[in-house]
Amino acid sequence: MFRRILIANRGEIAQRVIRTCREMGIETVAVYSEADADALYLRQADETICIGPGPSSKSYLHIPSIISAAEIADVDAIHPGYGFLSENEHFAEVCSSCNITFIGPHPKAIAAVGNKARAREIAMLAKAPVVPGSDGAVEDEPTALAVAQRLGYPVMIKAASGGGGRGMRIARNDVSLVSGFHAARAEADAAFGDDTVYLEKFIENPRHVEIQLLGDMHGNMVHLGERDCSIQRRHQKLIEESPSPLLTPERRQQMGEAAIRIAKAADYYNAGTAEFLLDRHGNFYFIEVNSRIQVEHSVTELVTGIDLIRQQILIAAGEKLAFRQEDIRFSGHAIECRINAEDPDRDFQPSPGLISVFVPPGGPGVRVDSHGYSGYRIPPNYDSMIGKLMAHRSTREAAVRTMLRALDEFVIQGPKTTIPLLKKVLGHPDFLASNHDTGFVERYFGARPSITTGVSASGANPVGDKP
Image (cartoon, rainbow, N blue to C red; front, side, top):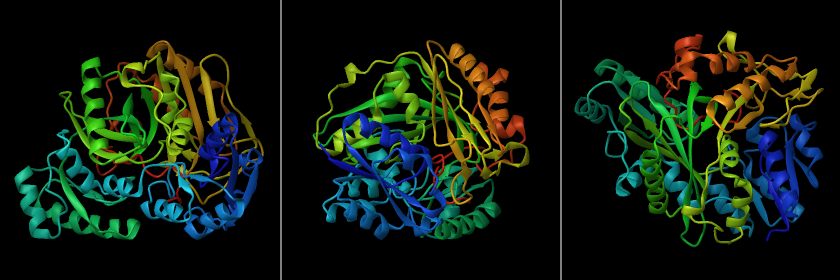
């Protein structure tokens, strides 16, 4: 087992990894930028190292600084968290070349599933349903027009790399396809350094459901059920729940088996998430694999009782999974709300600055994962998520009631937050009846419509530089 682990991340996820490492008897090294010098997670780590100024390109995304810190601290492994370098195959390769274990999948697997066009090809080889689309990348305008006319409008132009809605455009005719094709390529090149795009048939107002996977290096793979992430705004998830109110046991089994086939076809191990869209008829379609721990992994932990961070560490250390698919049991219903420092009344404008008062809720069925505290100054450099509030109860109805109570108790003074909007969503009749989709927030609460009516490719980078 590892003696020391460096967490190449910040905020809530750094704190989360530290807690599990402490329970496992593993020392932790936390890195931080100058903008995070007063971060809460630094007080909980065994050692801290400053890796650069506030911009993530000069700190959390700067591989030489991360590796130098790891070598100075004499660590055995690096946990990348989510966002930043967590899905960077080059970073994983550098770790390996420096004899430092990367707590995640093999670099080749990261590369295979990290390119959405390639992941789509892998899914088809694994006989998993995919959204009808182009056969690989679309290189030029005439090809794009031919593919769109074959699929039938509307279609989605999607960047092969990255996520968070960047490099995505919807086209409803030839004119918008031509303009969208060039705009998507330019945006993808600027955001990811890769202008490769492909086309898919656009699915109107889908549900977004993802399958949590765990696999070891010995060929064992299980799924831990699903999370419904349909409450979004501009490709950023706001509320996640498990299980999905839509899925029957039969559909859950079908989606879980499809996710496992895709992962095995990519020679994948460690934690990962296969993401799907469900149309209004209940058909499901694969869209991508996230080769990292997800922000919303916590709801899966609540309904399964499995510590996913612990499993990531054990798998990276070469251990076999201690359970089989038939051993997985689901208990109750869990809901997670992302608490962001944003103003929903001003198109979710970020609201960094001083938190003068921070009083988290508690009581039965409540869990709070947050790096916020009274006196903490939210830096403007990174994503606006302050933390995650979770409720776990025996039924969905009870979980919603507990979540509403917890949101009422949550006191954050200083920045604007998403708490008022979250309460409106949870109390809406369509949400309570599970009659919602990815366009729900924009339709009922006036958020600026996303170009895909909420179809999310990945839920966006939750800890990267602000847009």
